[in-house]
Length: 559
Image 1 (cartoon, rainbow, N blue to C red):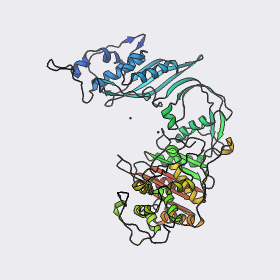
Image 2 (cartoon, rainbow, N blue to C red):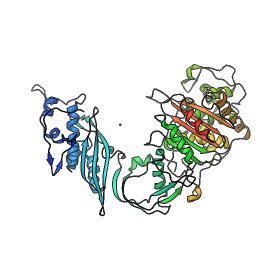
Image 3 (spheres, rainbow, N blue to C red):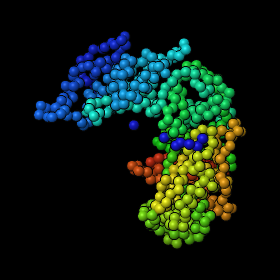
Image 4 (cartoon, rainbow, N blue to C red):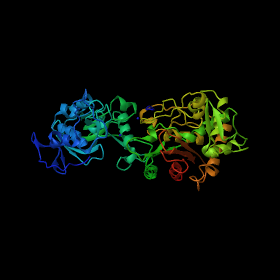
């Protein structure tokens, strides 16, 4: 299943409530503004005329920021028309009438939503939040539907007039462009997901598992013995499917009979992981059992997208675990032998440097790994083939082959073949290399166990599927040195602060990955202790040892 790879004001004029077709127009605080904004002459007068002077040869197109009155006018035109069921008029108030017409038509015909009341809230700049109330009716069963959405007003580049910036999320926040809303028999029966101890897993108890539970239903709903119910659901379009987003239930009209799917999730570890990421704005973490690949926990502080499984981010210096295994195998580095760590190294036309331009004179490779010296790795690029790192990631660590079968959609890492400067950057987890916490937890698990075990959330025995394997293992000598490097880093290097107080068999590696248009780097941390392996990322967090490190270390200490 490893595939993927996934943005005001009130008027003081007197108004009277208006009733259109037996339904009150769009209301704010109980007073109608929709009809006024659509038909009142005051808006145009306040905004100023856009007509050209007699000396102009053609009309001028208005430009510049939108006024509060323009935002009110455009949003009211759209919301009032939608509420009145005037689809063509509502769509004409947007910048994509064709797409708006299709989705708004389907809202009634396919989603079976009627009696819609739209209530806007106070605008913030050009963004107008609004609430939606309606009724979903299907085969004699009816249920109320209530939720919140928002729209943004923009200025037309062709007419200069304000209009709604059309996206499917205007109709419902769970919709991506190309998705639709449909009410009917679900097609896919519901599933009851169980943790490894047999207790039910719910998004209410474990918020991070919402998308995971959707994925389990999509894959196993028809295999787990359940019976479909009737529901209003989001049906994903082509764009969302490319990001491995699953269909989503919005409202259940009649319950189906769920089948049961047992997972490898540890309730204690999942609860702890949820608590750890909650303290950061954009944090994700995954914990696996090193000896088997069983996924014990996945948590994300941002609930809309599962970065832990589907993220595609440069892993920074955590990639040096894989690169080190390559260099040691090829005789280009050895833990206790001297290894160059200059301030700078130029390769492929790029001048690479270390953090704060440090250097290590007469230092060992172990010292360079522990301090995360970039030039110690890039200096070996001339001795490598363009595909050396790709082969190492695939053949030893089971990555970058799009063949993991976890039980839900995942992104299985990408280490593309590159050349020149980009190849050099890949050695330190930049360039075209992309990973997520699941991938990097697996890397630490491979180091700990000595063999790649494909991570999984549902046992392959459940559906007789075949898990991915790696074509070879590291030699005993390479593996021993790699463990030594990670242990030394956890005790004396950049990971020592986070891993302080750790006991037993453990090792770690930190990482920081620069991202365009982002002030702070993404902070990464991957580590193992005993039979646990874990990795985490805090986006725009800074150094991995200070941000993701404490999250990962706290979970490893539970083992």
